Image (cartoon, rainbow, N blue to C red; front, side):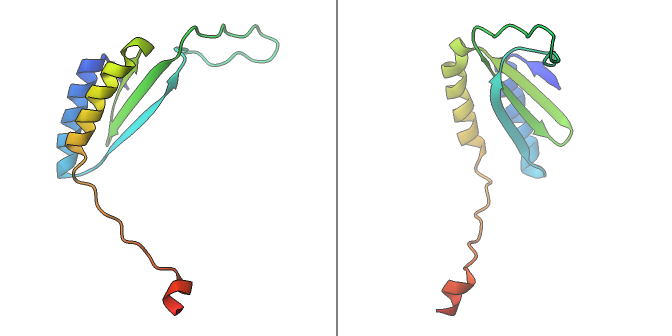
Amino acid sequence: MVLLDQDKFLIELTRMFQQARKSGSVTLVMKRYDGRNRPEPREGKPPLPEPEHYLCLIRAKLRNKVISAVVPPKDVNKFQLAYSSLLKGNLDGLKKTKKVKSKSKAAQ
């Protein structure tokens, strides 16, 4: 997994969407991140200190390429605007799913 800064992440995500137009799909994950890179200590050991503020971890995956970015709380609004405009511009290839009628409605 490649950890990028916010601007480079958006550029690489745009490239991923362009590659996915030909074949494949991009998987996006956004979650709260406390900045820890170590596992929780076992019982009886002193616990890790609680973070002052949580970060936002964003991952994108296309086939076997994974990129990620960590966004601090002060930059979330600016990043979210750029991220949402990027998604709006690239999510035009979605397929409409067909609704399946249930048997009870079909019998009436």
